[in-house]
Length: 340
Image 1: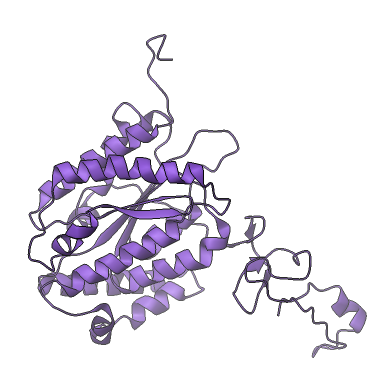
Image 2: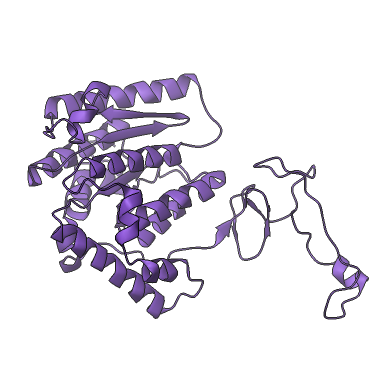
């Protein structure tokens, strides 16, 4: 299309994505003098902090009194750091998906370090003692998709954010830009990160960049759930929205606005979020399955070999001679086995 002077219809290249992210970061750092940026890259099993450098982490998180953003250093860290991580991933390829969970966990640790060094000098564990978040948590983990639970969660979240602003605290948020497929065995770990972020009023925004390849995922179920649980924004720009500055426009208009004015904007919303469990072996969504009692891995059918594919625990199939409702042994044998 380029040879015929036609506009590209995507997908975005790594260079286009990094350029758009850099433009977004420069704009974000210009919005407020206290805005702080930490960049974390992940590719395969490789995870690392791209910006700031290791010797400047104390300054950026405010432990040494200087939180200024060095734009030149940030650009070099993003471009060179991303190239280094991708290069290591190519030399040592991984079949276990991208370590987004490790990157998100590292981000939570850095955010907690930043909040401890902020004005209130209160750690995450200490701050939990002063919060009235029972309504929010109960609404979040409730199995019922009721409006009452959703409103309770939103009300509790808004109350905590208002308390944070009253104490002069900044509201941390995390933007995850994902261009790889979800790795189902990481689901439990990823949701633990999401719940930890929700408990600490950390907003997770998600941008999934589809590859455009046929039969490849066009969205990330993990990111959709993370954004829905923490009150963030999810977007999946496709086609021409990834090139010719389209990706930069998405970052500027969707993810740049601060939390205080998002309710007044017409931001993209995910109307239906698939919260069904996914088989750790096939990745398919399940309405009913079997759960390992040791690591809580979920499977559609009994794994071959008699061992859990995640933790290696021995699987024992239980079948009662007679159930409490009078079911015969023959009927109970037709039931699906349970993992122990």
